[in-house]
Image 1 (cartoon, rainbow, N blue to C red):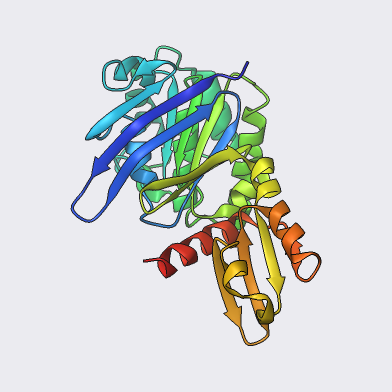
Image 2: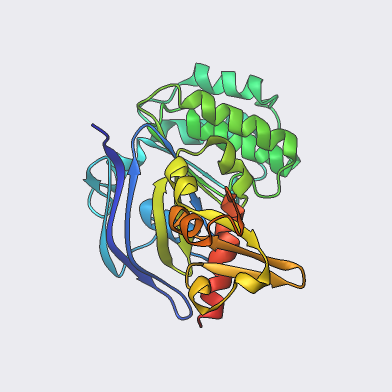
Length: 290
């Protein structure tokens, strides 16, 4: 029976110009869940709430079955956290930084940390200020993975990284998931990364959760439709989440692929969309309805 490593119920967090509204979300144990959405959709806010770094206006978050608000220290012992904007003491060496981090975790493993440093070609004598963005991300990963974390939470980890290290990171995540007890929540707006590794996709748009489902189920349900503009009468337009029209035809996204294939009956081409297609047309449809 599948278990949830994270459970979010009726979660609301409001700011002056933005709000997360009534979020209901389950993150399943033993899988990689991709959290997607445009910049400003609420991904980082949601992760900060899950990590106990912000307080919700309403709702509840449970991680490993425990309340984030009441048992934060126990929960964080089992989480490895990697963010795009990790802030380290720039004057410290990697070795000095390790001596600060290690005492916070009962299961810290010096040998495992050294293995990650060797794998990432990082010297414990190097100062943080001498590291490139990619090297700092590798350091964040080494620190996050060296205390036997059961849950790895990553907030935009591949933003600004070169394609070689992005691929290396994805391979590392796939290796980690060979241990079926581990889980990963991976937030990104670079959806091609998740096309390769994610099992489930949760999509945030303007502070609301559009869906949270298996990647394969998602691609079975959604379809990218291409055809002649002559097909776009009022009834056909209602079939689509979003539409892009040009002088030579249209592209549109449907969230009911089987129904559209039946109705259009071969008069349009229906393809498997990418995650980027789903994000783009959902945003386009929402803008058209404002």
